Length: 582
Image: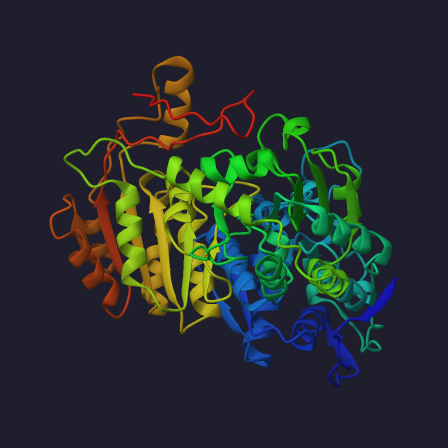
């Protein structure tokens, strides 16, 4: 094991007696926090007061707790820093659970500060529901979806707990940590404490013997494939990945959170894999004689419902920082390498001999599959195809630094299929593990705050938009230049398609009434355009995307367009369905 010290710096000089709220602020300053994402309430008011009066930290206040949480998540993803998210007790806490769960499942570092009633008003172990107003058992509620959750019952423990929270959020597999702060702790006074001790992270050494074995397998392989996951993005290992793939001519497919680990337009790119990836990507995985998973979970949505048949006849190797993920892999592994992806790829490059030159026939086979199984749209109709809208947007923003966010639904898959990604210059932010509608708009807000020079495009379905449509007000209030592309097919279509495929109807999910989203945007003070025809569509999109400031583009798209091909349950990766549900 190697040792990496935490980045804490000496604590600023404090007065002899300090407020608990000042101790919280001191921790934020020590960790270089520049923005906090909050939804206010009485039980976090003491901390907000100290932030305002004692610091230059910017308070970002979206319209809901969920909006604030997702803005924090987008900010953390784009800065690479630990985001700070603050909510009040009771409903503030329960409303925050969903974005916290998203951060947990997608490994986003976040310190969440929750207000709590005074310790004297907490029910503790009493057999009653509640003692204090807006009291909720935050720690037990948050434990399943956080790396750790702490209740600070003694003000003397506060500096240590805050240091622990920042350390845990960033160490190992990153994620959210909750610190629950009763009012009497925030408003209490104690003697100025000593600076908290530096924490150190134990980082696993790259196992040389296993790297040598993988290098040998690569040299022997005639049909290798790399499956790059979100871990490649998280540890910024895209350069090391590309060096390996390009030098040894290994095709690369990507999970949804791994999109951009290898350029979408690259010769070796297979794009998105899995249940809604391409047939050629899935064929390559299934027929590979060596499948190398890097920073990926081999999730159901990446490999299908038959984990024992992920490959037909071949070896599977996996590199992952989390030893528990390796030990409990749903896909059987022939080689486990517990290491940071970037360090492992660098070691693998040193261990590999000259390229074997054995993959030429394999590349020709993949090229043939790409011609045989292109991504196509359904029969032309009166309204534009959603895929064509995405392609037109992609063409309009070439050669720009782009951050694309999505909601959840069919559009979440069409975007990685038809929009080009290339980290770190063209980035996808989407809800991968938790799959949350409403992720889209507030995450775009946080991403724009983090990267003010980026072209931020929020692709969103009509259902997903209405989960957090109130955040249009935050965009206007902060003057954020975000382009919102609404793909409106009057349905919750990914579920509707599933219903039709299995039960021949779509109760509650299809044929939805929708308002005029362009008119709603204008009511908020956002420029808007409407598209309902392919005539002039590309020019309208290009014009809207080139304007300064926020613009909402309301696209009425074909409601009969299915997400195809799709890998159905009980089928191997080489057997995707192209059967229309209508």
